[in-house]
Length: 327
Length: 265
Image (cartoon, rainbow over all chains, first blue to last red; front, side):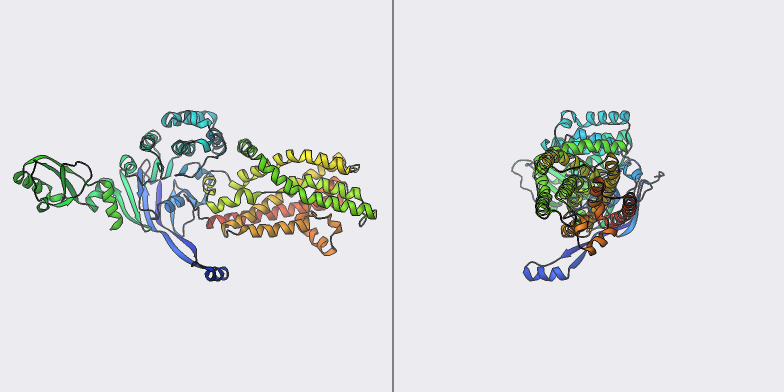
């Protein structure tokens, strides 16, 4: 890649100092006079770069350090060590020019005021981000078209459903057409249809504006649909940085072979590979086979058994990532 | 920039209007102590003729004016902002290119003021009818001079209140500190009694502290009880404290942000 990276993270670390005390009255009294603290390393020496226009998935189990990293990159948190540059700015200096160029959308958190309709909060954002009426109307029309905001904008935010509110939150975060989007669980709590709509929207937004997107999600469908590249973080450390397909090859270099056999054939498939329980395809039996042995095993299966149907597939990405977390 | 304040005003006004019942409760709470002082001191002054040279009318004009000045110079930043640091809802404001305290919280204070003044007017009218104070010494010039003092008073009280609220970045127990501050303010601002009735030591200390700018000084200017040199002296004192409060606020804010942990979500 020749383009200057938009996001440049260099040995970024964050340690939280958490007050600690045991339960009980005596401990409470002791804690009053002398507080004890524990240092919790949330992010440890994380380094990566993101090129303009890239959509990168940020994965890891709860508490892995994803959100902490996003908060540092958007400027909310000061790091304990290391540095980061985004669009040439140091995020936590909170320079207005920087804040006008980025957005952070956090799952349930509101940029919108609960007591008034979203349209009023949007107008406030127009003023805060200094958008001309023409730009504002144009972007709003575009967001309306992509997210179908229409009637939602006039209802007080407290009366919206979770999905409706999330759409409005996203729109509020994108009115100023940020070049860099930090999205923390943008589809959390949404039903399948709403998730899909937000996904399509983000793809379209990225295509139209060339914005750079770093997103976390617990829904693998978000990641597979949007991101060619993923970062995997676990216990605060970066475990993987690369393509989704390479990830399977590296972490789980095996394939799943599914065979449907003739009636009343009870064959012992464990001779060919590791049998795997799956919920779908009741009449098919699945075995896990090393990637480089797939051709040989398939040939043997076909020669030995009355095979009606056979499929060869990559293991589900959820399983691959699950493995990556536990390595 | 002006547009931000204008839009913020619309939004905040609309929000607070929804909580107007709540507001009336606050207003009643704030009314109690000045009304009690007013009743007590007027009764004493009437019985004795005067207290340290202050007549019943002096007390009536002082406390009735104080009611309004107090509304204009007081701030409620700890209510409007403190919890945002603790529950992390500050995050949403922090990533917008507008200072959360100097835009949102400031306008919140002003909208609250405007709304509570609306509520205060009828109450004030009733008290006026009851005590029938003689406002003969008030002139237009005095009112204009007082306006500047009120502006200074609010500026200082807003910045000090904001700086104090920012202590929430370090400790969740900022309320106790705020109570202490409120206590000191009552003592040195002339809220209990006109400062001239306070012990000499307190009066001397008050001369150097910012708190009299919140209440005593604007009231005295309105009532025409200060000379020109005295007024100018207080302006100078007010400006100095405004600058000091600004520096303090800037320092606490930027140091506090480094401690901000953006909890939640």
